[in-house]
Image (cartoon, rainbow, N blue to C red; front, side, top):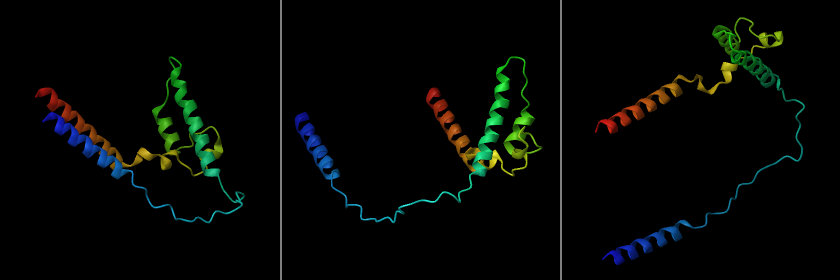
Length: 131
């Protein structure tokens, strides 16, 4: 009985494997790729400003690595939101750019989803431990 079951499962696995190896249709999409590119009109000032802001924010945070050196949470939050002229480089204060505008985790729905997922995992683990 075990031999027949093993033979049947092997045959079934072989059929599924062979069937899944079916060739797809070739890609018939065509693309119009230009032969030259013009980057003269590209404006990177926003990205450059945000990278400079991140650099200054990083320097400020690393001050906390020195024992006895306090780091101001208010200053860090102001740098993140570009509020109250927190940067040493004055052009960053007046750029109108903010790090928080490009930050992925600012979405409340995303944070709520992470919180709910975490709660479900904790509850599941608690149930497993108490059973």
